[in-house]
Length: 116
Length: 447
Image (cartoon, rainbow over all chains, first blue to last red; front, side, top):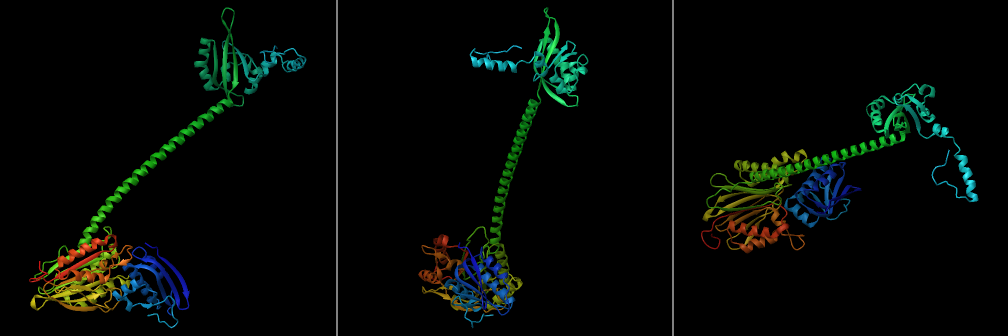
């Protein structure tokens, strides 16, 4: 099991969390906890950069859904950036590609919507 | 006084004579002075104990004046009460019997009220006829020795205390070890009981046996990834109105008791909803509303992926299948002509996470000898390859099924069970398989 690492960077459009490691039953709660502690303004967009994510199971998907719920409650938006192919396939399978804004790269483009 | 011993005897040379003179000067003390100022106490008593003579050293130790002692006190008067008693009962009788006593520990009392531990030696001087005349006694200050002995005793008591302490600690450690062992055994028992309870609970989440339905053959398989965790996969098959049957198979997020609670709610909601209106999209919408209300709306998002379908008799002994999918991998059909195909349900959203979502539906007809396979992603997400990095995948499953079609449900499940076993550790998730088929009238698919 690769340990989960989350690093936080603030950008012009809002916070970015770089998530690396594995989002599984044991570790997904750490992401949920980290996102729950984020204070978001309504005009901000939370970006989860998943380029370093090695594995994501149903608990990981739940953590992403919880993050979405947290940002929506604050009136903010959420985007998933650099989603690995495997996770992209799973998101499409469960229909969540219609729910999350997926960005190809890590850097948010200035005019990119957040998919609120 | 004469010199005693040979050590200081002059050898007769000139230098030695000078040294001899120096020694003589040093030793010119009178016997009287030696008696009075000796480093020990001297006293002589009459046979009845009356003190007849006592030296200055002893008077000094006891802080007494000679006039108050000589002829006025008995030896026993100089002793403490305990010392007096001992003198009376042991010392004096023994002395009279033996004529001498050496190194007897007694305590004297001082004029200031203090106690002086002493070692006493006495000898009886006798006359020419052997008759006792008087008692000569030497007294040594034993304070230091007593202190030493007391220190020794104290040390011994300390050591004894420390030993007892160590013994107590050892017993304590032993007790703690026994308690830990007891706790370990208890935990082991609890763990076994929990595993038993989990197994029972797990079974309650799945039907004991699938109902026997006329014109339908069924087979199931359930693989539990971890015996310590309740699985999150579920399936069921039941009659709707005697002519139609409903089935479902799915996978809840997470593991353990929370997943089991979600599974239970999902299973009973699906069954109840199916009896109300078996249209797959309606059933899944109901389930979505129930799960969302129960969990996600209160900030605890949970969901399941699920295929729900209805079988209804069709012409020529076949059956129509109408199913809906909420974010679940597509069902697979093994055709009678040897093909295998997915029933695509793209865009179907997982159930329970979002307030209102679309579900995808699909329809097909199963002819006799054809089999519908539902599975959870434990199968398609199994890790394969030498490094375990590759996933088995839907393409490989399609090819596997095509290689065995046509095949009745039991044969399909048997083949897939062998496939799953071949994955070994690569099969790291619960996996449920449900196959439904129309028995072939004759031909290759028949049993």
